[in-house]
Length: 86
Image 1 (cartoon, one colour):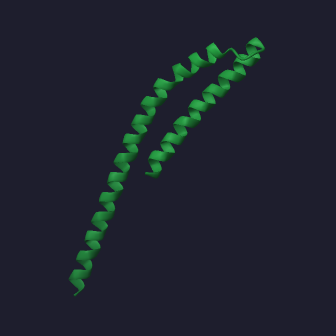
Image 2 (cartoon, one colour):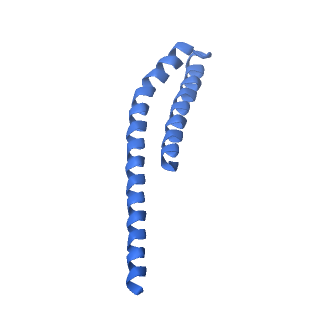
């Protein structure tokens, strides 16, 4: 679950950074904040970030499943070793 949260936090941070950068560039270029440009840039940045977040969540889910399988097999092996020693 921690990997999923981390992936979402990174995607949100990138989205916020793009919007902040757009505001700063709009202010620098025009001398004021052009909210229409900021809105369009945010809408342009959102779909790729959403796709990346979906892939990151799938990868995190697969990693968690693999880690759980590894932990279960280690427990199973530890149980067999203890049973063999009896």
